[in-house]
Image (tube, rainbow, N blue to C red):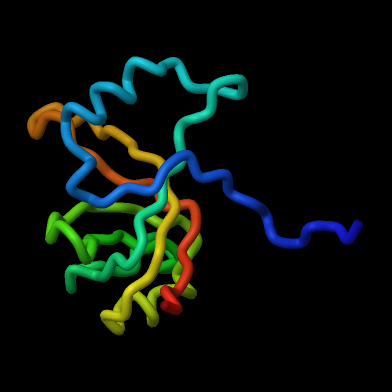
Length: 127
């Protein structure tokens, strides 16, 4: 059997951004603590687009700070894609793409809790 050269990501569910609600995140919290024996669920959303405000960040501009909208809900969600700057030209072009991610909660002293997608993979949408 040939050796697999591309790492595989196991997707737990496909979501639209409208499904990522405070109630959904609260339900995810019930599965804590996450770790080696209990990994965070990985989700996929198809046909997302740059909201127009995504940008390169990091000392060497190697990461992408994303503001994304999906094609079904119009809901804007923030995300971060570490070491994926090579995808930025496609993202910035406004063409749709698919993402795999985990949902992270960021707790801020003054701003409360915000959600962010930790993007694990980006693929151009070819449909």
